[in-house]
Length: 388
Image (tube, rainbow, N blue to C red; front, side, top):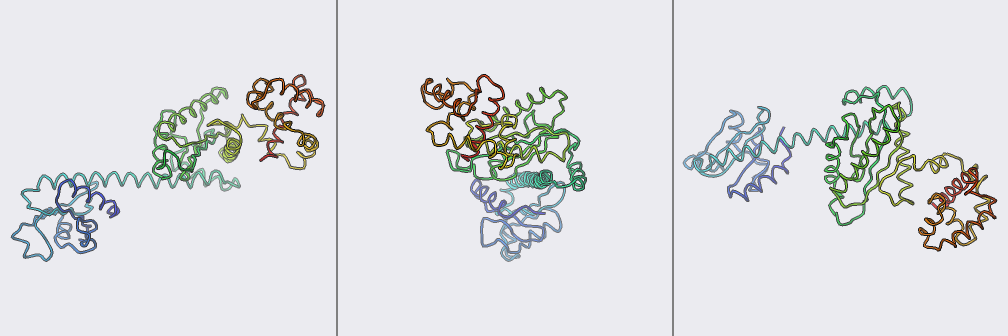
């Protein structure tokens, strides 16, 4: 198998620019697939075919040119990968003068071929992992799980491990980092993530699109507090890696841990929910489902139930200037009036006045009664959902 001609042509052009000699790359059938002379691409090279068939270097001297139609003096050198003949390198020139150069070019071509083979292996493995991960997060029954687990075993993963889902999403819009739209850029970040010491061999990860990376993070901690701290430190490492490699805006969202791989899809959709919430209201670059539980639970409640408990109070406040905004701000500032005033660019006394007015309208005292505070928080999330 010979690597793609376009890639070889780029290398040929660069070598010709550097050394000044014409070069042809010839496949094992004697067909020129890259050349300094574009008119020769796709034509048959008799000496290249001879060198391929005999697997030896064939030199053509000036005196030999008349014996071969279209052939010029030079060296036709086989090159190999893992001791297998890949093709022939033809360099035009006097053989005695370009002998050392021929060996250098041969080494360059073989090195490039090795790198391309590794890149293709990585691409195919990543494609397998992307398909495998999509299967995991779209499982609909236990019967399908058996096949998926066997697939994971073949890919080298311990499928009994407790995991959570992490979704990294990068901003698609143009910015200072205009090259980020390319798949190559996100691959660079992905490779840095994989090589980090906090990334475990059982972490199932892949690039799922030009702006997304998904990681199913493995956990081996029996203590949930240590597990949560380890996850947080891992996310901090992701932040460091991304900030080092791009200026593009991004978000990192984490679902909860599940012991059963069948439920990893739930963790993934939790991470999706966190992403959606962060896009709407958060200034943070990363978030955890535990930070959004109220909103998450409300998202699982039917509209009829939510309206039954909250719509009447919402209608009372929506026509009074600043009231719904104050409910939400007090909730987001954990009932801290000073912080709320700062966030709303208002005087603290204004917030105090509104808070007292809200207590009267809603018949609540969230600063003193825990039940009233819970209602306030739920009501605030209801208001946020109405806005969105």
